[in-house]
Image (cartoon, rainbow, N blue to C red; front, side):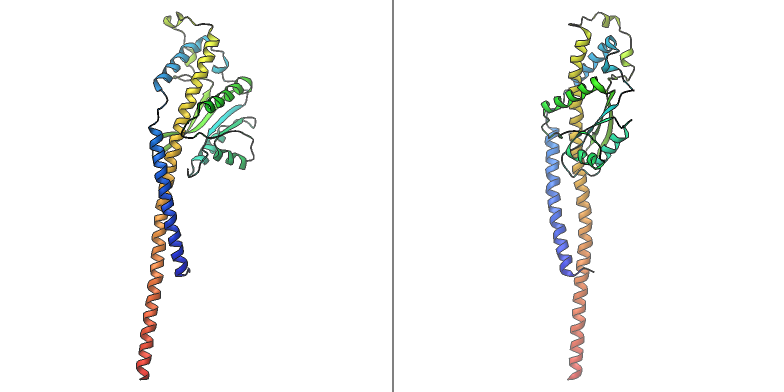
Length: 287
């Protein structure tokens, strides 16, 4: 059983830690709200890009961007974080990414130091990119996109992106996104639909393949921006909920420590009163 001094010290440490967690939680809430106020990716523009891709896809149905080459290995991009206090979120992301592996030749691409640490512990090789801050760097985004597209065209048959999809402050979903080959808004058979009369009247310059490649690069950048935007919101939300859980656990711990502390103080005082009373009785008898 701990002494009163030890219990008092534990209680002081626990309360101090609770104050620190409250500060961290407040900071996380401010970051989350500040990020939500930033300009979001333009959804209307992205919808137009999707429409262009769905119109042009039948013209180049055999293009590598539209054909899954099952004989080739896959690239799996796992979007994690550089920061802590995320609970089990990074673990769930890594496990979901590992579930997508079809062979030992699949390439693992990790975004964020936390995920990289998990992969290192598994003794697996991987390609690392730093996680994004609340100021999403478009040059870094394009660097990741170019790396993925170059490797896909040269040696991989599909690209899967695993990321935390933001639902609400209290809910995040582990999303497995088939990034390449392009499936279109209506699934894998979208590019196989025959052209309409209006589509057949399109004038495409300089030629369909080049136009598709340029538009696809733009589409890929916007799709990845959408993924990273959702991931960042999920990161902040998961941190807030994890810190809230820690606050509740510390509150329960403080109650137990306080109860034990005051129980021992009461026991000590009760013992002291009994000893004083017994001494007084003995002294009275000697008189």
